[in-house]
Amino acid sequence: MRTDLYQGHDYYLMDELLSEEQKLVRDTVRAWIKKDVSPIIEDAAEKAVFPKHLIRGLAEMGAFGPYIPVEYGGAGLDQISYGLIMQELERCDSGLRSTASVQSSLVMYPIYKYGSEEQRKKYLPKLANGEWIGCFGLTEPDFGSNPGGMVTHFKDMGDHFLLNGTKMWISNAPFAHIAIVWAKNEEGRIHGLIVEREMEGFSTPAMHGKWSLRTSDTGELIFDNVKVPKENLLPNKSGLGAPLGCLDSARYGIAWGVIGVALDCYDVALRYSKERMQFGKPIGAFQLQQKKLAEMITEITKAQLLTFRLGQLRNEGRATSAQISMAKRNNIAMAKEIVSEARQILGAMGITNEFPVMRHMMNLESVITYEGTHDIHLLITGMDITGLDAFK
Image 1 (spheres, rainbow, N blue to C red):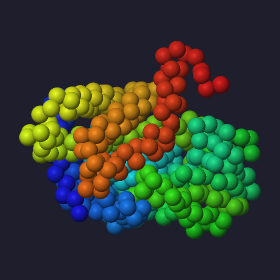
Image 2 (image 1 turned 90 degrees about the vertical axis):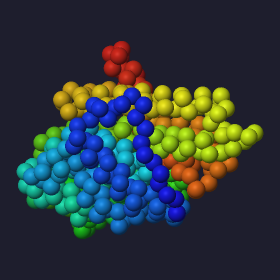
Image 3 (image 1 turned 180 degrees about the vertical axis):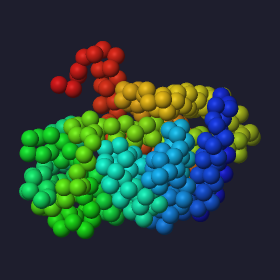
Image 4 (image 1 turned 45 degrees about the horizontal axis):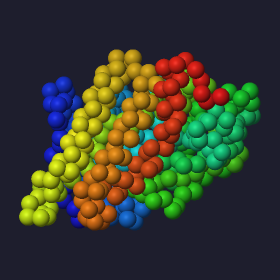
C-alpha cells in the first residue's frame, strides 16, 4: 500500500490567480484522494475493478456536476473549480476522473442544458448525490471519429419511441442506472434519449481485457426494441452539435485532468532523484537528470497557463470548441512525454507498482484517443485557422 506524499507544484505561482473557494475545493479533493483513494488504487488497477464504494466520496466532494446549479443538486461552482477537481482526481488515476467526468459532462450536462425542467428535477439530484450513475452512448462499433454516421435509430410508435442499435467503449455502462443515448430519428436527425436500466431490451455487457483505464468499468449498450417514453427525449437541442457540446465540456475536464498525471509523475521523479544514490551522489545532481526535470516542470507550467486561461474563457462563455481541442491535444502530449521521462528517471523501479508511473502511462493510451483522437483534434485546429475542412 503506497503512501501518497504529493504536495503540489506551482512554479509560476498560479495559486495567486485562484480564489479562496477554488483553492478550498482543490485542497478538499486532494485530502480525500490522499486518505481514501491513493492507498487502494494500485490494487484496484491490478484487479481491473472500479472501487464502487468511492462513489459516495465523489458525490460528497462535489465531483458529480460541480457546475450544475444548487437547485438541481449540484455545487454551483465555476469552470476553474471543475477543472481543479478533475486535475486532483486524475492525479490519482485517469479511470477515477473518467467516472466523474462522464457523470458530470456527458450525463448531467446534457440533461441540464438540453433537457426539460421535469427531466432536470427527476434526474439531476440523484446523479449529483451518487444515488444514480449515468453513461453516455455515442460511439458505435463502426463509428468513432465519425459519430454522424451512427446507425442506432428510433421510430415514433405513437405513444413511445422504439430504439434499436449498439454503442461500445462506454464508460460506466456496466453499472449505470441511466444512459444518455444519441440516435437518429426516421428523418436521420440525431436526438438524445434518456434510457433507464429497467427498460426491457436494454443490456450493458462489460468489456474485458483492457490494459488501460483498468479502474474504469467499460461496456456496451445494446438496444433491442427498447420502448422509450416520449418524455425521455431531450427536447431543447438536436443534431450532431448536441453531443459535441457535451464532449466540449468533457474534453475541457480532460485538459485539466492530465495536468494532474504530469504533476504526479514529476513529483515522484523529483523526490526519487534526490534519494537515489549513484556514483556517490543523488542522481538529481547529474546534468542529464536535471535537464529532464527542468523540461518537465517547464511543460507542466505552460499547460497550467494554457488551461487556466481556457477556464477563464469557459466562465465567460467565450471558449470555442477549437480552443478546447487545442488544450486537450497539447496537454495529453505533454503528459505522455513527462510520464516517459519519469519512468526513465526511476529506472527499473519505474515499471513496478511501488510507483504510479506505469499505470499512468497505460491510462494515457486511452485518454489520447477517447473523446476525440490526437489526430482529430489536430485537424480541428487546422480547420479553425485555415477555414478549410480536411475531414471530407
